[in-house]
Image (cartoon, rainbow, N blue to C red; front, side, top):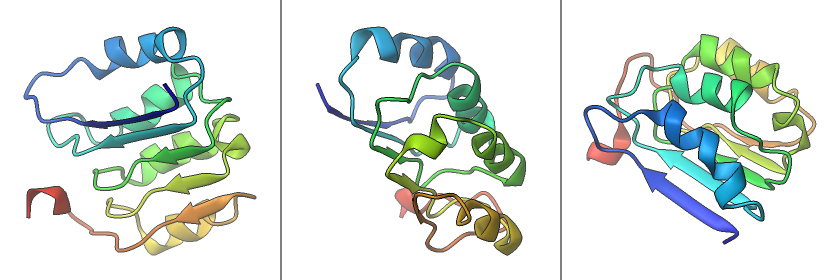
Length: 125
């Protein structure tokens, strides 16, 4: 499998447990979309990616329609695997304009459409 998109809608999802398994289960994964993680701690997705998810083989990581804030974005910036992507989509999260500018300094395509200062998920519309 090369394309996987997950939409989280569980009140108690142990994202750490699931992310650790991805590399072994899907070693040829090229696209990973993690979306609508409303009930998950706002920065968790970014920290899981930084600390546990092996993304070196990914071409595109789509974290849009979530609730990543600046602290989570900083974790992504410090992740070497993120710098190897072709595309990172962080649209519709909770990033400040300054952090979006920092993210766009990466030598990859960063898609960062509309950011909201509060935890609002466009996926619920």
